[in-house]
Image: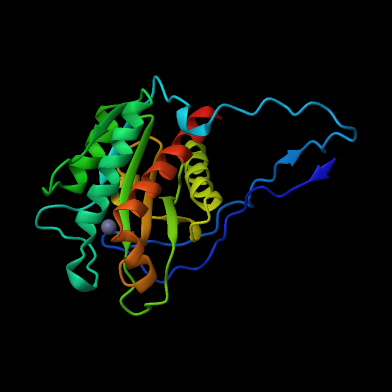
Length: 238
Ligand SMILES: [Zn+2]
């Protein structure tokens, strides 16, 4: 048997956050190690390739997609007038559309530029008995413009389901070669104030020139949305 480390999470101390996090960072348990069977020794017909990942349905799941901020709450600001609320709405709407296309029941906390209380977002997760709540944000590190990358955040006392969803989403993005920072625990209101499985995604840093360029590119936002959906499909397919 040949052991291969298929996934690992980079657990870095984080110095920064977007608003309302007040996060406390603890490392998660050690990364999961999968063992793959060794390759066949003699020539054999090639195995039938698995169905393309992009068409796997997600049926029977209720998923709340929560684009962060909105209205008077712009979220983090980047140079050139970029603001978090617009970037995350763009990504969030695409995530919602793609999840619906795969057969999931999707509830989106906002579909336009409007302000929504954190308590209302959490209440929607609870009331809908969401199988997964996905809050979408972008980071800012005003004192460290080198900070960059995609990360997933879960509540300090996150359920196993939340942890699994975070790993699945992070790894889908990582597999595609996009820079990832890892998974972090934190004390986010929208993860704490309901009992449903929940993750908060930070799509990248508006204070980093490279990330800002990417997040300003509609093609990158679309790709990111597809990868997030891929990760969600992986989670529900487990
Ligand atoms: Zn935010």
